[in-house]
Image 1: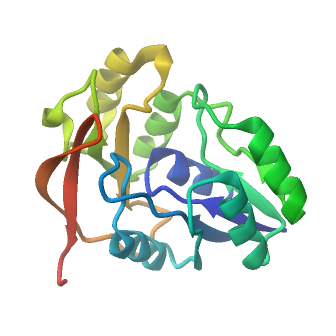
Image 2 (image 1 turned 45 degrees about the vertical axis):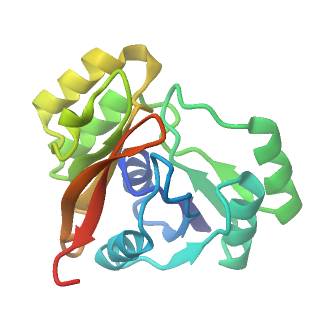
Length: 203
């Protein structure tokens, strides 16, 4: 079965891709507005897909219908979402969209708390750094790579509410054929928090 993975470039996405090892996966990314906290530049998403050696499809908007339609266009029979335990989604709209486009839904890491998913990735040699955050975190977190200490510190602040106040960028590890040469530029205010501008070496 071909699976389209809704790709946001960070923790939940990479943990889901790890859980889908051995499957025929296409990444599907829905761009967000430049002013949003979670915005990820197109060239960074393309660099991640190239480094993972996976096909990449685009959805016009980050809503269930657009993602399901993009998955169907890519020839996928299932749409996987990288939601971790405690992260919300509009279950009714998602179910309608999946039914309309005849695509199954999958939640490969829904059972995992964010800290457990992060520890698993760190222990297997994956590299992710904080690219955006909002309170209760502050801008000093930006650019920090996940390691055992960072996982404990972030989890101590985020706790049971989940890690939705932090966005990570995955750049290297066993799933990658080569490193994503992302560079962290100046932080900026975005939405109700802060975000690093991102560049690529050689661009």
